[in-house]
Image (cartoon, rainbow, N blue to C red; front, top):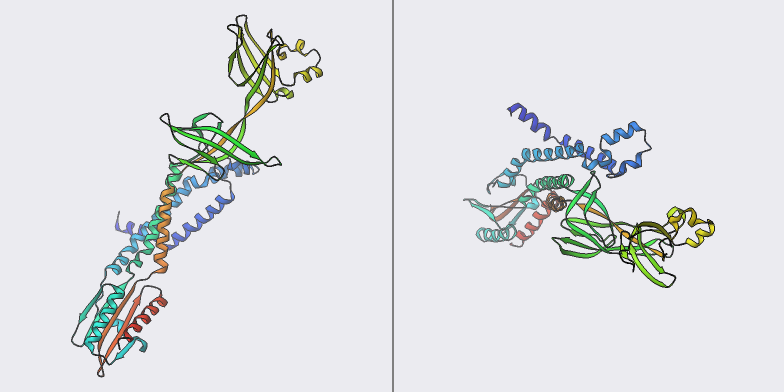
Length: 459
């Protein structure tokens, strides 16, 4: 890159104005993301808009803003801005961190206020040793220089505070990278699993299509309890997670109590009942023999007659508004036969005289000498699960911890540098204290006052 282009690049991307502009744009975008429903189905809430305006919103990806190309570009520009700013200013901070000022500098002692100077009758050598001990305890490492007329000391603390802002920059980059990784590699999905069944395929919420998991989820049991007014009180799913034909994890899933497996978080989102469910059928032979069976859709059983197979084709809770019914197929040596078995067949016959002649398929005694009776249909519930996989969560968490550390260093620490000179004046030993700090002048003043109180105790 030519030198001129390099200067323009660094000048533009190290600009504080660019930082503020990007932060304002991202803040406005975040407000829009809060107002406009995001992800799957979000756009349905704005179908009342004119087709043209809805098309603009959709083309700008405002219904899935945090995964949009332009939002990722904004985050990338902010990251580049932080990197260039850090590279531009870091050398100066490093120079301050590594610089070791001379103890016998004269500037720190110029125009000292009277309270920063202590006079004592004690011997100068004795005072020097006492000052050295006090500084060593407070600053751990000090530099000392002895001259003919005076002895100088230099100590510092909090030099790491020069890097607080860079820790914030680095942690912000970590958070942004975690968010982008989660956006690109993560997914949200949903799946409905009937009680007693399992699946390894889920429906993606944001993208179209399905995703195959590398493990199987099974709903062993679903239970629900209701309030007196009929509203659901609590519903839970007992799930098993199976991998390589082995149950790796079992546990109950409740609302607000998710389960995490293989980095995927499972939430109890909804429930419902599947069409059909389980039916209780009574088989009567020549008005004598009765046998009640509990069957599911696609179940089969045999009658006493040889080679006579009964298969449940369909289970309907309210067929043609005439109540619960089951469609039965009978396969016998004479051929196949299908007919419906209604729970309220007697009431239906009262409303429709000659029903069996008009619709023979509604006759539950069509296969002689058997008569089939439907006792009841038991609902079969399914559990609605929401899945969330975000590989960037851990990265964002690490970045957030470093942000807190950086903020603490930036706002609650400062680089304090202290110079002490011990010499003689009018036959007395004089202690002079000069200090500098990159910030927090109140804290620096308090530090000097404490130090002067220790020096005063020498005399």
